[in-house]
Length: 312
Image 1 (cartoon, rainbow, N blue to C red):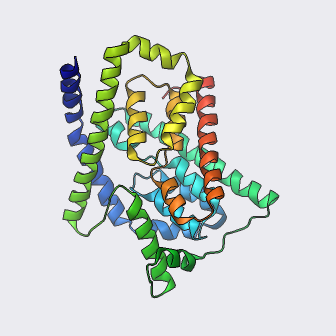
Image 2 (cartoon, rainbow, N blue to C red; image 1 turned 90 degrees about the vertical axis):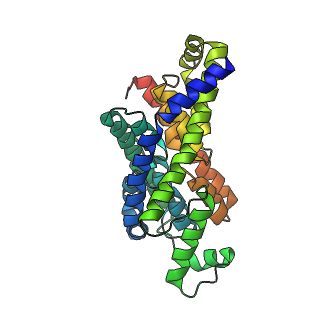
């Protein structure tokens, strides 16, 4: 049984590798061509920060949520903008969907829901904080961040760029950008290998679970407890690793997770944004509150999707 599960898992995963590589190649090319511009756009967005952040967060770029966390810690963007980015960030959902050759409309509908939720929640959060606690636009303090990071910058502009790059680079699973076409190919290859490993692991564990429990019993177990599945999926989504979104997406595509739990998990799955937030922001209580808020939003929206019977 074990040999059969391993063989099936390897074969199923290898079929996805070419699609993953092509997808990541396109994503890396996009990221290199827009490097530095996105940060400036978000920083200059002002009150429209959550709208801009949610829209840009949906673009499949590596480490965007990490950049947003760094900007928030430096007082450049509002908490609503940060939350909007985390909620809309697609992380590894896009390449996994494309690798499975799922209908593009299905993928876009999920991404649109994440963006809409990010915009609404981000704007409401900023408005409530402004009305109740009189929290206005943040005051940039990149210099303080740079001092804590000991990056010895020579001027404020360099401080912002250096710290953002350092914070993102430390947390995004050893993802370092170089220059030129070879760097794009190399980064795409690294991402492909990493995500392939996660998919192989999830496929193997899921296949083993099916053999032990039976596919019908497992589907019935999760399907009969959609509320529990929603809370668990959102909790898994908080794990600051691309494996979280890979697992949630794979289980959804395999029919194990319903639309509600899938949405809850993917809303909470903001890449490494929360990890970078805890690294760059000294206010631990604030960090925990933001993480808990993202989790609650994911669960609430997931439950609404389940109750309304929305299918993707």
